Length: 459
Ligand code: S3P
Image (cartoon, rainbow, N blue to C red):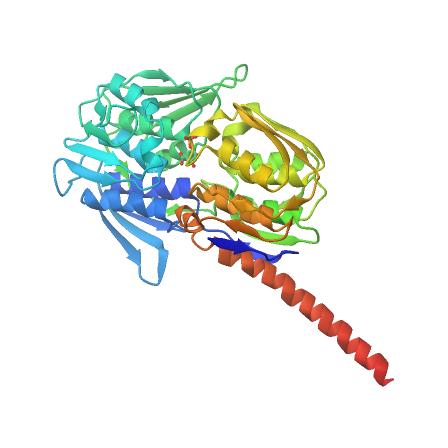
């Protein structure tokens, strides 16, 4: 349980931890490459550590810099060199859907048998979306409980290349198929209805794989083709700050009056920057500074509090902000007017049902909000009341409502706060520091004011 009762302006500079999606992939591709991959800016959160542990169990040597745990060295085993402690090997993916799904694509092509599963949340999320295409490639993949969920038993097989039309825009599904495709006997193509995050495409190319992707300008459909690969080659990975973690400070900076925050080194890959586009539509004052021109682009974001207005959020932008929608809903509650979120049914199968979680918690805070099958309608502009928040053990729900608490009257109580360890272990400390900056600035100001008052009295 955590009581949130600090209010007021947020000021100062912050650097958020490394991108979760890119950190997972750095371990996966570094482990499968030949040679030593150096990773800087790695996210040392529970999800990424679960991926690291899985590869260590399959014989990969991963060394952490004792002076800086975000700096790693991975001695890759090569594409066909994974050597598990036991056969079958049991792999634990914790709360991480990304680990479970992408790793399944790799395991489908190995010469050993694996069982992969995680906590209750992961084990209730849909896996048919990867079981179907991987089975079509020739994998033997079975849901142990027969419910199309993890734990999955995967017997590695020689795979064949396929053309797969995915019904969902999911980077986890796309990446699982792409990873399996590295081992296939011919090219593998995934077509998705809208382009999802393209970190696998970028990183696999950097590791030497042949990957082509193209968006159909008429339909917006994205086609990605990966060629069979003999070997990946080690490549240094610099992980930018996670825009999904920066999102909480973007939202807080915008909705708390008088705030000004500089967020350093945030990944702004165009398949992830939807929150910036939606915030601009809502009237946000965000300046993008010092853009890099790197494999994964990043920039500094200067966020100033703004009068927001509601907007419509749907269509092709959804995959680029899917993880940010809970905190965007909080922004919408603080904005004037109505916000409609649609085409986001995927929110129902995340770490929790994020439509129900957001709607019920916003309602508890006094917001007029209604759930829809694929999103929600939020009437913004009324004062938020502190409330008891159910996080459903979902890190993004906990952090989103910690932001809502900043503008609520009275105390807000999270039923559980440890879940932030999934993606952002230092979240509460970082938030408090920004509030503390405000206090020290205000303190300096009031000290100055007191001093000048004293001077007036003396003269
Ligand atoms: C991720 C893809 C997204 C996202 C998740 C991370 C990834 O999931 O929600 O947090 O790293 O590929 P989907 O692929 O299910 O949309």
